[in-house]
Image (cartoon, rainbow, N blue to C red):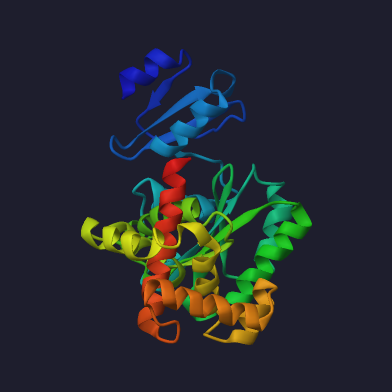
Length: 301
């Protein structure tokens, strides 16, 4: 890959250690497989070039302070464990912006106001921030994270996706746990692009659907998706019904439909698929079917 990059970009340079100074006119990337860095002048990189470079390599961004730099090095470039936090349980909250980040100082003040004073903010790419949070002083309610997202979107006119990471012991395995969550987050944003809050609990159905044997996927397609082709909103109606805890009033309000219309759709779905809309077994099948439907639509784009 090194030779390939040299042939594509005349300003390409390799580094065995992370460059001490990062220029605003140059892109810097880290190659995990080779444990080395390289740079390319921004003028030579098109938007499409940047997209595939970002997929293959990790972009290196200048961090705000020494502690943030220690965390960046630890998570991405096989650096040492930040000593002050060693042996504690911590997590990484990922925030991805649809476009380049606003001014870091303003953004930092807005984000950290939602967290305890010992939280650490790290800029990992031009469009991503990480919040490193201690378990002892954590923000645990989904509503709090949603309030954070809405505040940032209103203040900075930005579209944001947030992943609430799990807590892990801060040891040599911590970066691997983080990279696994980062991979899941990236994969699932593609399938739930309209969502803004993600957690393992929320993305588990997507991950399981992607790992299902072809025979099971084929069964779901034949027994549910194909019979519902002429009425695709029916499946989404049932999915929302389960998300609302099988509460007809809440579901009707969320879908902006009359309760009688909802009852009609529930009965119609049961008649077509022979799946009960009043059981958790049915909910599991419906969730997998809805994600499989999303996968199929994405594959056709």
